[in-house]
Amino acid sequence: MSLGTSVNVRRVNHPRYKWLATYSSNANVKKRYFMRKQDAEEFAEAREKESIDFGTSELTAPERAAVLDLRERLASCDGTVREALEAFCEQRESAAKSINVETLVDDFIAAKEREGKSKRYLEDLRSRLGRFAQDFEGRTMSDIATDEISEWLHDLRVSPTTEVNYRRVVVRAFNFAQKRRLVQSNAAIESEKVKVIPGKVGILTPSQMADLLNAADERVIPSLAIGAFAGLRRAEIERLDWSEIDLDSNLIEVTAAKSKSARRRLVEILPNLREWLLPHRKLAGMVDPPASKVRAEEARERAEIHDWPSNALRHSYASYHLAEHKDSARLALELGHINSALIFAHYREVVKPKEAARWWQIAPANEGTKVIEIAS
Image (cartoon, rainbow, N blue to C red; front, side, top):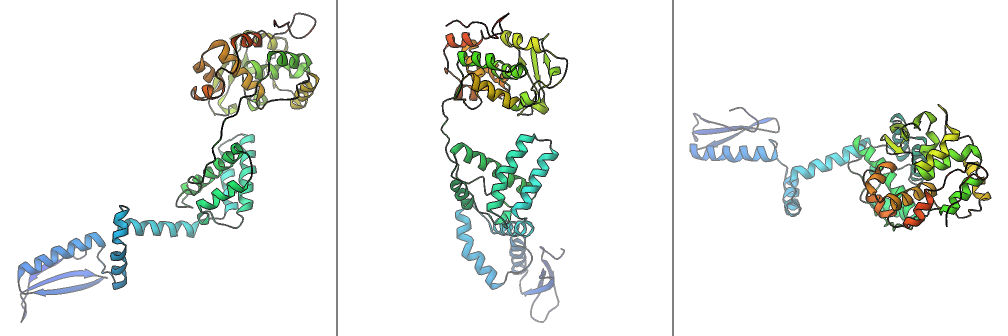
């Protein structure tokens, strides 16, 4: 038998003993003599088992005492000495090569730029993670505890939704660090998460939408109509090209590169939207004109719409579409959602069918005013 975890037992010519057991300990050869072969073999079996379980090196007295003292605690949490030592070493190794928060944030944002993330997404990361890096300046990622992150989020003194958004990007930053073995675990993922109570979705009335289109500059009408009657996100409209609007097939293509979800989808051009787009039809070129936000705000002022809900056009489209067609799965596809859960959470029964019918009657007039008369 070879030395190491094994013990070699053999008969010897000795004045007092007949059997010898030899084994390796701390790179040295150790010997034990026995009168009986059975005693030597029992020692060899016990020694080999101990070597396999605890290694070939003998433990010092303090090491044995530490193992015995902690054995009961480890057993109570279903742990072993090996697992405890490995976890300790991993923590120390992560701490030794961890980097400060500012560097990690820069590296994380640079990685997202290489992945081709949108300008708006990157700006959100710079804003929120910039605040995190500023408040934890000089600290290493592995040195930041979960309780500190929870306290930091609470001290932001922002709305619950904003706090959740801050927490989300910090969790992603820690995930980035963990994948690169700069931290042992994600300290942010266990931080306290504030509960967000969904508020009522704000939408426009059919009369407000008609007034808005009547008051709008001709150049901004296509983008307003697409938001209200196709439900594209503002960022998607800003990137939309006329070549992606197929009025022959009545479809708008939202490419993966221009979609928030990075998934391509086709959105149906409903009859009233088609009427709004036809007079402005082009083979190519950006749909959203320069200074469109300013022109849209001026139209709201002229239409005397003083209370403009968040994502008003997209939310209006979804609410009136669900009331008109009663098909949440179809609406989810049009909006670019994975499933209809969000539809039911925010848009179900917001408007009555009669109001929905008025919404889809909003169309250009043949002459005179821009909008046809909407029945009361």
